[in-house]
Structures are given as structure tokens and as C-alpha cells.
Amino acid sequence: MPDPRRRRGRRHRLVGVLAVAVCAVLTGAKSLAAIGEWAADAPAEVLTALGIRADPLSGAVRAPGEATVRRVLASVNGDALDIAVGSWLRNLAPPPAPPLLEPPTPRDPWRAVAVDGKTVRGSGRPGEQAHLLAVMDHTSRAVIGQVEVDGKSNEITAFQPLLDGLDLRRTVVTSDAMHTQREHVDYLVTVKHAAYICVVKRNQPHLYRQLKALPWREVPVGDATRGRGHGRDEIRRLQVLTVADLPFPHATQAIRVTRRTRHLGEKRWRTVTVYAITNLTAYQASPAQLADYIRGHWAIEALHHIRDTTFAEDASQVRTGTAPRTMASLRNLAIGILRHQGWTNIAKALRHHARDAWRPLSDAVSRLAVLDIIPTHTIYATLDQKHATTVWRYFFLVQPLGLPERLIGAEPDFYLTHTLGEWCGTPRALADAAVAEYRRCFDRATIHASCEDYRAGATIDLADDTADAGRRIGCPVLVLWSRPGIDSAHDVLSIWREQAHDVHGRALDCGHFLAEERPDETAAELLAFLTAQP
Image (cartoon, rainbow, N blue to C red; front, top):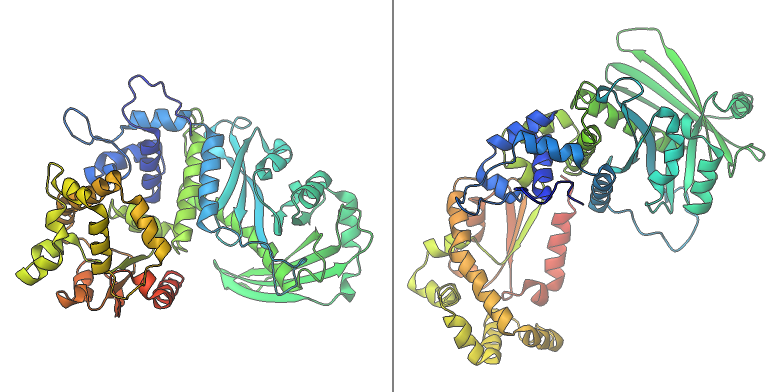
């Protein structure tokens, strides 16, 4: 993203300021002042992790002030920010690859996205308010694209620019009545190779009258559901009818949804009837799936409700430059992150993150797997003579003045062969091609990098471990280790249970190269752990 500030006098990098802003919003910050206050209270270690650099003279880590936050968020390029946010959220849960056979059957539903607009009411006087058109993934509930339009009437012209950069193959696009436009659906079907479900209201009077006049009394209910929530009882019935001559491009089926609702404790029911059209055939989507697509569209309305109630977006008086749009984008990003982490109550998630400045960072890691390692400070703190002769690299490679680099560089092939042989517990577990690649890459730069890695472990990493004493990892942790190996001198699970709340794992009968020596067992453990539902 381009930095809108002049280079002279710039203390903080753009990425650092934006990272601070995102973490502040993840803790519930609703305004630019609140973002500045969170940054001022954040520990130096948190700011460093977010990319805030120390002062080159004093070494102190100073947070970007409220004035800097205001200046950056009011001048950042809104289009570039929305593209970056949308791309990142899409990559969190990429859509599945298209199957070899087309079209899908009712047992193979398509991905779905919803398009809807929202006015940021506090961003200006009526007629001058920021209006944003967004596209949201039905499943992840993440906003994967957003553009700003001049006003509600111009939302129609922003529809295609919003979707141009997205891959919509095998995707159902749902929208409200404003986007029930012939140009839109033709673009979706012929250009984007997508499907559509469009609500039809009286803004399409001829089509609406034709749908209403269909013989619905003779059409059986294809899907019926009943649910209670938010203080009301709701019954939903969907009917679908294949119609050959619908006066709308590519349309094949007409849909009627009848919703009956009543507030709990009351007897009076309120009935609402909604009509829609789609180019999905009866073969491509069952009535139950059509009902799911239509219900899924309401999730974008729920997203807007969260921004208005939990984040008080409409009450916000932020009006300068691009700040209203930037704040909306940061809220979209925060909600997308929390949804990906498994949170269903966003307000509760914000309170959770607000209690510890590290949580917006640590909770970004949902699961951690460690293979044949224990914390470095444990190794240094528990050494005896027998163990020291086994982990001699922790003392040899950290020596200064290039001593280990010179000694290894004198006979690099001998050192590499000895190390691989010592670490590998299964004869010829490493393929000849892999060993040859090790040898090719083991040049002076690689030798120096290896030594620097161990030096960091004995200095800055060890200092960080000491500073983190008493803090524990919040996400589930899987530990796999070699036997015989580090378990000959340590109780591996007990060590990691001092570092994290939720730890499990086991030893594998092999050397240090678990993935190469026990590929099937290692892969099975990792897949089961990383794909487990929270």
C-alpha cells in the first residue's frame, strides 16, 4: 500500500500504524482517539511485535500518537486498503477448486457471496455521508471486497467494479432488490461464470406482478424451517417453480419465501412474502439449498448490525478525509479475524481481547505444532554432563568472531555428513536428492546463518523467554518428538505444559527428522490436529 505521508519527518512506517489500529479495533476501539489511547498503553514488546521501531538514539519504543493515527487513517488510500483487507481475508479460507464435472448436483452446493450496501450515517450531513458497497462470503462471514460510492442511487454502477477482481466461478451471488438488474445478472452469468439469486420487489413492477401471479397455491412447500432467537419465533416456508418464459436474463426458477414471525409472549403472527428469481436449475440446487442461500444473504445485514451496535459505527463522528471508510474497513477486518478464530459473539470477543494487550496478536495463532524441540531456556537451565555432550552445538555454534564458521568451512562436507548422520535415526531416511541439495546449499552464507540462529537462541531469544516467564500459550499445542532423543533427558510433555494451557502429543520411534523418517504417522497427527474443530 502507498504511504500518503511525505517522507521527511516520518517516524513510523505505514504498516506499523495500521497494525496498531487493527489490534486496537480488535479490543473494541470505536474511534481514532480510542486507537491512540490503546497504542499509548500498549507495552513496548507488543508495539515491537507490530512493527513499531525503536528510536535509533535512545532505543525507546514510542507508540504512534493520536495525531499520527488520525493523519494516517484520514489520508490512506481506501481502495488499496480494501483490496489488501479483502485479499487477506479471502486467503484465510480460500474457495475449493472447481470439480472436473459440471454442473453440480444438489449434493454438491456452490460457494455463495452476498452483495449489499451500507451508509456510514455519522460520516457527514445527509447527502454527504460515506456509502460503501461490500461483498461477503456466506460461509466465513468475511468481507472479501468493498468499494465506496457517491450515494445510494449510485450503488448500481458500483456493482461490477466491486466484483471485477474476484474469481466467481461456481459461486452463487445473492443481492437485494436494488441489484435485480438485467445488466448485473448478464454480467454474472456470461462474464464471471457465476449464478445469481435476486430478490424481486416493486422496483421491477412487471416482473414482480408476473411472479406474484404464478399458481403458488398449487406448488408444494419445498423447504420449511422454524427457529427461535432474538426474542421471536419464526416459521419459514420456501416454494420453487420452474418457469420457461420469465422476462429476465438466464432466469429458470421463481422462488417464493413466506416468513411468519411473532414476538415471544405474543399470539399475533406477522406474515411477510418475498419473491426471488435464479438461474440455478432444479438439478443444480435443491429447495433446501436455495433456502440456505437466501438465509445466508441475511448474514451481511447481521454484519452491518454488528458494526452499528457493537462498534457504534453510525454514531461515530469521524468525518475527515478517508477516515470513515478506513474505520469501516478495519471493523470488517477485525470481525473477519474473530469469525475465523471461531468467535460467534463479537462483543464478547472484544472484551476478551481488551483484557490483555497481547491477545490480539497471540489469538491470531489458532493452533501450534512443534516437532522435536523444547524451549531453549529449558535446555540451558537443565544441563548435566551427559546432556551437554549431546547438545554441544548450543555451545560451539554460538562462539563469536567467526570461530565456528571458519572451523566448519574448512571441511563443510564432513561437518554436514556427521550432523545429518547424528540426527537421523533411520538409515537412508533422507533421499539421495535431499542430501545432495543440503550439500549444494551448505555454503559460507548458510554456515554463517546457522551460527547466527544459535547465537540468537543464546541471546535475544533467551532474554525473551525469560521475560515471558509465567505467561502461557493460549491456543492448543501438539508436540511430537523423537525416541530415543530429547525424551532421554527431559519429560517433554511436562515441559510444554508449563508453557501452554492445552498440550498433547507423543513420541515417534525415529531420529530428529520426523517427517522424513515417519512420514505417515507425522502427517496423520498433524492433519488430525490442524483440522480439528475448535
